Image: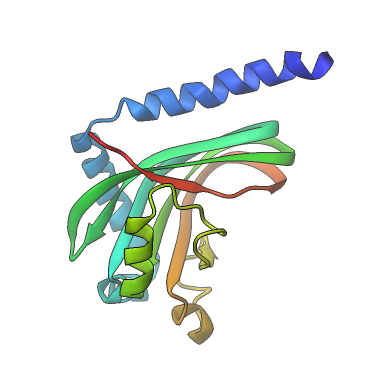
Length: 180
């Protein structure tokens, strides 16, 4: 079947991203998280204040994505509460649709309500869009915040996009605790 000859290289590419990311130590992840937080706070003066009001923050300094009709992304990060790391998490997604390229991005997810944070922590394998609804702020983090957005129980910020990815696809991210 012709499709298989195209799927194997893509599968190898996606697996190479996840294998290299899996090799990251806690110290490497922690260092990358500090850089990502600094970049996040520098995007908008209100980001630090908004983060201080959150019950918890899920921070992924680098999520790699690659796709050729079928795509995937993977990243590792931390869950912080009161400025302290309490757990390590991975995020992964598979997407299907018209897409081509590779990119990396940073992501910060703010749990504005304690109940939303508790639900996330109790449900390992939580999937965005299925187990939790949230507002997504792309790139300009802070420029897209409105009173409606700020009242959401979960707010996700996507920033530091690098690379080129043409994308028209269906996808959802799965978050899983990393046991180290």
